[in-house]
Length: 548
Image (cartoon, rainbow, N blue to C red):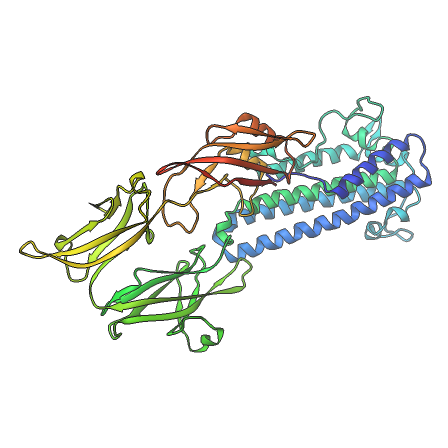
């Protein structure tokens, strides 16, 4: 989850502020006032950077909305609500700051001898004469015995703003968010005593220079909180909706071996497909590699639902191998057009038997491997087949090769032979196909919510404390690998490491406690991971996560 984390610059500013505030009780020297001015100027710079940072995020959010309004609209509408709430609160906070300056400096606004309100906004601490005055700002912000000052209204506004922001986060996730802006609880003075309340703690007998610095610090928290909430809304949109982790051109043919008179059919698409982003394909027959100069004379095909259907008639083609190349053009998340080249080939042949895998061009041990068996001009009931290892079963969905378990660990290939059955019971061999026999690849081990760089929000992993398995994208197969055991590397305060162990896919309570206490940016290493596969248990590579 997103959280309020101070940068080293902010930490330095906060430390300087605490030191300076403590020294005020002794003496407000020129050196202390100068230091406050330096701290405040740093805060002003930090706030300008926060403003730029959140504006860039809104701009990127709006670009995604323009590209895919249906999917992004609910999140974009919430982001605009956050921006409106933040603008109102920040404008109010600025008004408190400028009115504190006006009240303390005795500035007259408007009239014949006064200045404009905008002119006050341009004043810095170095322009003020009453920077060491504490009685006037105390009266304005804390108040006097008969009435409360502006600080109490400010406190209510801060509480309401914080509550409004957290309303955009599901209730079960709010505990993982720390957006600052806290005005409740005990506030301890430098001497160890408990002060009356938040307003007294911050503004009672505090000089104007410190008041302005404190208000700018609250402004920094507000802007950072705004960024965290909007960033959460942006991340809540699945990355698949408008951004792909890997983009490359793919061509998927029904078969690269085509009988004369039939059509060669293939789908050309971007590996990560968005059905609302319709690509275009340009291709040229006879070319084995695409060059941009081919575009002028290339055949163009418009796509639909994220794919382009390529149909090449073969009725007038002689039996031989044909090649072609092209490119697929698609809009990227920024709206710019990107093109990805592809090349492929197919064979036009006389009718014969055809055996092809429906999942991959290999068989995997320990699982059912669907295949397709057919022969042009011959009905299914006139076909017979055999396999050198395992067995072939016919199901309602087609043919399945099974029985390739531990007994085939030393077998590298299996051969399927296809025969045509004659009326007199004779067999005519139509062809054969050799398939490589392999183990299913190791699954990728991951946790829910992690991105392609291994980053994961602390709240995500604590909400879903399980290691899960997923076969790599290049494996066009499905098998439910399960994690049986793993260990996690932890570190003591002195830097010494030790391992925590789990005998299931779930993180232990000790692991969860360690992650909960870890800082953002910390690496979490899971190793010695064992998973249950179709032919028994196996060890898979370690998983390294970075907390965000």
